[in-house]
Image 1 (cartoon, rainbow, N blue to C red):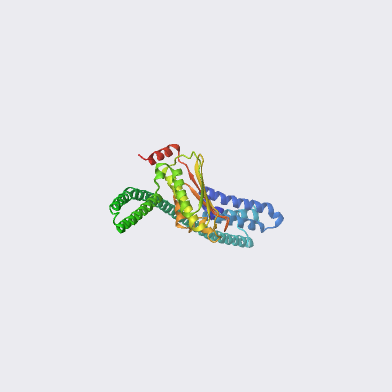
Image 2: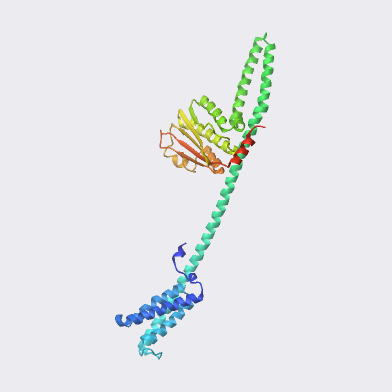
Length: 379
């Protein structure tokens, strides 16, 4: 605070301290004047007392500065007027000097009091502003926490809905299409003598096979059953194999052989991260290869996805390398990792030098991991 740089009346807590400080400053000025007057001349006591009274008026208050003025007048009369060491009525010149000193002291006290009031008002205003800033900061922090909670809930609902749709497509629509395929095959066998009808049935059967394959692919992409049944490693290998076949991008997955099961939320987050990174490489990078490294230490899991494509232009770096106005996919990745206590860093050395995405996720304790693996295994 700015007010912390100054000595204020509030810093002199009690009246005894304020009065004592004012009297001490005045007595010190009188003693200094008495000691140096033989060397510098008669006006010096007045010049020494004015700073002491100014200090008293600024930092001790009206009462202490008024008492200091009275003590200064008695000191001047007792030590510096003729005859010295007497409190008799001074002559006219000396009386005029004392009156002038009294008027100057009064002005000093008045201006000091005015200054003290302004400074006190400023201190109160600053205190009110700081209180308001703290309140607004607390409200903003609360709003951010609520937003993070809402985003986490939306991501969780999205994953659950993907899992439900994938299950429905696989269990219901897939079985119905299989039955329809069997019916059409049977019908085709009875219509061998009707070449045209058999051709139509054959075409319909092929279409049903294609639809079944597409639905199975969509179902697996929404939420691969392998992710729940056998874990992250199998799901990633299946997805990368299909991605490489569709995109003609060579993907190198480096995953430890003894990679154990992780909590379900952690496995889902890593799978979605790799899925989003590979999608971005296919859409924007132009890289013919991609490399994925997943490593697990005692405390965290590190995921690195690297390509050798176009890289990030200087114009887009401020958006992509920070939490700025980046794409929806990147914002979703950041938010998903944030909810799990993880971090996401995107680095690029420039155009044509590729892009590296690195995520770090803290590991839960062994009990939580085992419980999550048991919950994710099929019953």
